[in-house]
Amino acid sequence: MSLEQDQQSYDVVVLGAGAAGLMCAIEAGKRGRRVLLLDHAERVGKKIIISGGGRCNFTNLRTTPANYISENQHFAKSALARYTPQDFLALIEKHKILWHEKTLGQLFCDRSAQQVTTMLQAECREAGVVILLETAVVSVESVGDEFVVVTTRGQITAGAVVVATGGLSIPKMGATGIGYDVARAFGLRIVEPRAALVPLVFSPEDEVRWCDLSGLSAEVVASAPAAKVGRGAAPAFREKMLVTHRGLSGPAVLQVSSYWQPGQKVVFDLAPGREVFDLMMAPDAIREPEAATYYLRDVLPARLAERWVAQNIPPDWKTRSVEAMEAKLHRWEFVPAGTEGYAKAEVTAGGVSTAELDSTSMEAKKAPGLYFIGEVVDVTGHLGGYNFQWAWASGAAAGRAV
Ligand code: FDA
Image (cartoon, rainbow, N blue to C red):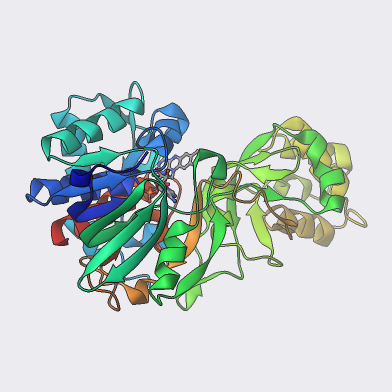
């Protein structure tokens, strides 16, 4: 099938009908621009539909630039300030979608994530956006002062092109590297993409030590001490950790995975804010593995407590050795063999370098008329609704400028 004559020329072509592309198309359409939004999938916003366990954690009320990882920590500030969580919430309320706040400012739909895509499609209709599905982008070329988008259904010309094709996470859902290919074709630098918000995998030795405990979880503080943000340390995360059949997952581990680099340690405080073995310090206290396990069961699931003590039996039970055991509990270290990769990663960190883009419009400095938004850009949010907020904010920034 090829494109009809009247489908071949637009003011703006938005590549990728995910969260960022939909928002950009709406904002540009509302300004009277003739907008085409295209995607190779059979429906729009597939990741929105599966997000947040089917309820879509669509934003976070506590969003600040510190919730994002990027080579340039300042880049996201302008877009985030001009399209806030409250702005998206106003849209949700306009469409009478019921929502609730979970922990830490995370907002979810009461019913279904599908309501968010239905809402965005309705906004697209109202803004006159043309949506073309099952059409893959092959390449983008600049011809005179226009762009030609080569697709599997023919060529489209446009005054401006917005690349919103996301990252490499979950190839099964249609993720491709086309956004990076387009950026490279226009001479833009890419910050090496990597899987982020992803479970970590144990080394073979650690797998033997821990993986039969798969399914057990505990609240911990997780950090990647070698990771840096500017000149400072990367943040630590107090959330749940979950043992899996190959390594570790759970929110604390997903968060820290975004900062972790191969070969580095990750560190867990397994009993944050607690002195677990202090009752063993008294001169007449019973000092033996069963006593240590007994106290540790207060903070960890019984089998995890037992295993941790068995793996960390002190050489003797002198006070100094019990103190060392306490210290180890608050600094449980290991070097992951790797991550579960893009197949299980919620997002892709890295991407089009922010140094190449204007932070108010998302336009490429070297290629006027070409814009990059959402996950394809080197801005990656923490877990908790921050990635969608970046998609909405960067999408709105480009949609208002294009
Ligand atoms: P997105 O990936 O959404 O969209 C890109 C679009 O481009 C897709 O529709 C794709 O089909 C299309 N495309 C790719 N290549 C193409 C080509 N060659 N031709 C045509 N089209 C092409 N975040 C959050 O804040 N809260 C949450 O609850 C969750 N939950 C969650 C769960 C799961 C399982 C995953 C995998 C991810 C999340 N996320 C999340 C992350 C969030 O989904 C993600 O950050 C945004 O969807 C990114 O939006 P984009 O529009 O940038 O890319």
